[in-house]
Amino acid sequence: MGKRTTGIIIIVVIVVASVLLYFIVRATISSTEIFVDSYPKECNVYLNGELKGDTPISLRGLDYGEYLIEVSKEGFTTSTQSLTLNRENPKKVIFVTLEHLTFTLEVESYPSEAEVYIDGIKIGITPLKTEDLLLGKHFIEVRKQNYTKWTKEIEVKENQTIKFFAELLPSSSSISIVSVPDAAKVFINNVEKGVTPLTIENLEPGEYELLVIKDGYVPYRESFTISKGDTIKRDLVLKKATTYLIINSVPEGATLYLNNELKGKTPYEELDLKPGIYSLRLTMDGYLEFSTEIEIVTGKISKFEFTLLKLP
Image 1 (cartoon, one colour):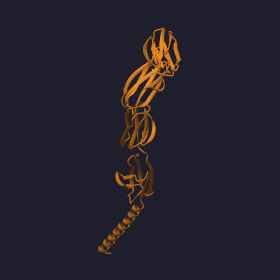
Image 2 (cartoon, rainbow, N blue to C red):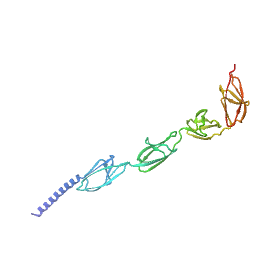
Image 3 (cartoon, helix red, strand yellow):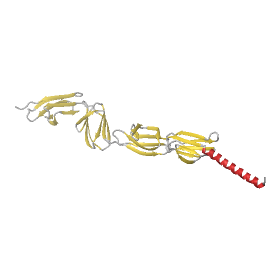
């Protein structure tokens, strides 16, 4: 066989070997696969740092070798895995569960013990610390009865601690009254409201007359002006009366004189009159004038009631 024939045979062998190798390699490449799925879905999949798409995804036609698979999604933890494709293990299946990223929220308020709401859901009372809030946009509300609502909209993109101080402003006006002794009657603009200790809420802005009375004690009187949102407090120590005079008449509305001094209309009360004997006179149109003497004694309630007679 000549040299030419030998050369042709060698070339043919090389071509055939190359074709066979090509098909062997193609068959090997087409048989490799990495399938990636996740919860939640639509997570980004990176192969050796290169974005390949979103889950679920099949990565085919890969060479044998080592690979780094990274699965990520905004607001969630990132999963990273290393794997090797070879003749014995040409295919791999990866399923990952990503956890939500969270942040910590701390809320204090004045006054304290206010309710805290996140996106309309109540999560606690101030002072508050919660560590499992999801990243993203949130609407925070701090509420307390009789105070204006405090609100804040936030957007959190990373794990961190966010602190807020909510200063709440009164939404209505009120007056709180405490007295020693307690159980004293409270009048606002001559309307009885209750007994001490007492808080009167939802007062309209304006001027008021306060009267606090208890049998045997000197009445407390005060004029005060209140503005919207004001909270007025009064801690009163009532003075014990030396004498206490009460005069009623039937019918009421008679004009009263003590020792010929005009005192006003019945029913009438007066404290701390000097003990002793007093002349008393009652007059009223259409009734006979009534006169007598009364005694006021130290440390005693001097209470009298007189019935007037109609004129003939």
